[in-house]
Amino acid sequence: LDDLLGEGVSGRRVLVRADLNVPFDKNSPGVITDDGRARAVLPTLVALRDAGARVIVMSHLGRPKGAPDPKFTLAPVATRLGELLGSPVIFAADTVGADASGKVAALGDGDVLLLENLRFNAGETSKDDAERAAFAGQLAKFADFYVDDAFGAVHRKHASVYDVPAILPHYAGGLVLREVEVLRRVSESPEQPYVVVLGGSKVSDKLAVIQALLPKVDKLLVGGGMCFTFLKAQGYEVGKSLLESEMISTCASLLEQAGGRIVLPADVVAASEFSASAAHDVVEVSDIPADRLGLDIGPKSVALFAEAIGGAKTVFWNGPMGVFELAPFAAGTRGVAEAITKIDGFSVVGGGDSAAAVRTLGLDESAFGHISTGGGASLEYLEGKKLPGVEALEN
Ligand code: 3PG
Image (cartoon, rainbow, N blue to C red; front, side, top):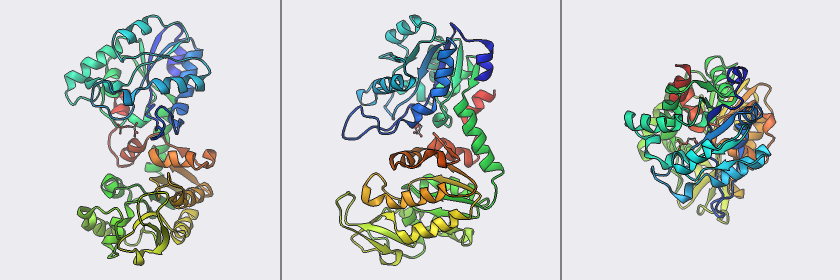
């Protein structure tokens, strides 16, 4: 981005891919619960606006099926972005249609426009190269330059991420640069001891990253819904807890391969149902009642995990330890997060739910080394996969 700014962008139209895929309150439509991703792209938007560029921002939101769907409109995000920028954001009610074209043509220097959800167009996510390229061509016509600052989407081979930069002169935004630098540091030369904390619901989603990280880590701490498949593989009964039966044997072989480096919870908070008002108790993992489900790790587990984290020089954390959105099941995630803030070393929070947990639990963001805006993207980077968005920028 500095290179582009150095060339001078006053009066030029710049298409910025952002990841404004922010979470909304399930009970109050249009209310954003965590605007961290919008705040993360602000420096790029401010720099371009203040340099007099005509800024066209594009993003996806959720997973609509290639056609307009009011549930996934970016309109409330345009309003929030305007509040954060301190200047109004013009909103186009379509992505490449008449409204967008008219508003792009009418942009003045320093104006910021947000296009409607990219995924309202089938070409954005199409597996067909020609269909994607056709949509990318319509987007590219809007601008002179392309800036990718959507780290959360760089693992997607989508038109706005992969095909537009093949058409326009392209630049990495500061967020994408910083994210890639941090993840490169953690994956290529982590200072030892290196402790990884994984949570979230499914082992199957994390299998590739576990396999890639196991040879590099001193300890891999496993909490969240995924710990129950590991506990089952160790021979414990897990009651009604989340269980991926088809992954039990894989977990057993990972435990064997890890030779004690995978650390599982010692106790869990077992509840009668998935609800904030459910009856719940802390139980040892050997005593999970048949009619209960584990919704958080317990205090002994927090102490066990905190001890391992405390000795680390590098910590990577992805995935909550429990259902932190429900107050009775937030202590595990909070305890582990607090332990991470205290290390004498470098910590990375790997996007998605864990980044949202840091903010919604009111933890001090500055106490972490880096909070990624990309959940899937940071995991795929650590798995060693090529990220289409990064490749497109490097070409
Ligand atoms: C995310 O939330 O991880 C990014 O915004 C990417 O969203 P996606 O998984 O729907 O592509």
